[in-house]
Image 1 (cartoon, rainbow over the protein chains, first blue to last red):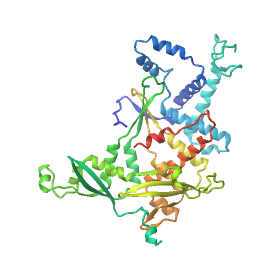
Image 2 (image 1 turned 90 degrees about the vertical axis):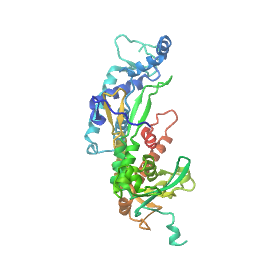
Image 3 (image 1 turned 90 degrees about the horizontal axis):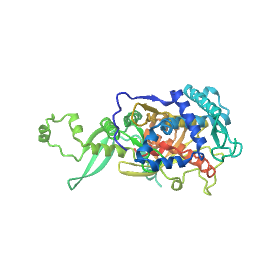
Image 4 (image 1 turned 120 degrees about the horizontal axis):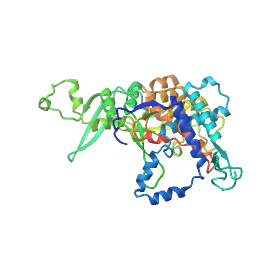
Length: 147
Length: 290
């Protein structure tokens, strides 16, 4: 544990549960990351690391980039709660009145993120791997068979 | 066994004063000191938890690992100082000659003077001693209602959590809290409580602020508690749940509720097939370090 450092004057704290845009963005990122599990080529990363003058700096730069940056813990926690809630609502009979307004907005953001993910990705009919839906990609990233 | 012997090891919930003995080694000498505090109310604990201002900072991965590092930041000294100032009534074992007071430019025989002179480390130690309570490991707990053959109790209408605590230098190894089995609503409230956080935008690294959770945990305790063992109120064991709700220490409520829901999560994870995704309570472990 460390002493709390003072926050910069430009920074401000916002409740994550009220940030529907952020929830949708990070939920989409979460789905993409889950879809890429096992299909992401580690060769590119290792080649870059080997060629870099300072691999640690390269790793940090990748961590800070929007594409590679991990989902902030605060969003992970709230999205995890929403996924659990969604699961419970599907299995148990719950009255909509039992949800708070921010939970409802969060579930809607989650649904939008999932819909966007489904629109922008396709499943390989041979190995079930998730592949981005592009005009040029005709082969599965994992099994290399035609999609 | 006499009634007196039965109540000998009960933790009193409404003591006139809490006596905290401290052993301090300073400049090669050992001092036996004593801080006498008034019992903390729920409002005192709420203020203490809010003053902790817990935050988690996410740092870039170190070395070859892809996993980010987390740093828990807690204002433990400030919070302890605030709580001590609220609770402290008097101290024993300190030497404070009037001449020293004059030398320090402080008026003699005032209430504020001696409080300001007590070292911060002593105040922190006294506050830490107030919160010495933890769940007993399930294997060692042997809680009432647990089947002796280790089978899962069907139709159980109570779940028992066993805590151990140290108060006034005395160990209380078996403090039992019996709860109604939590409903889905209660579990949802608990999960919501853990998930509600704030994110700081504009800082160099992502920072998550953990808001005060004690009031919510206390509410859950008050909803679910059935009875307790190992405690006394004015020398008498407590039987009525309403009495328990009113008299129980808020910090004990917090630890008991976290153990209750923590045990449920562990039980659920234990049933998950190997290789399946297991949800872990990330914050439960970090909070326990405060």
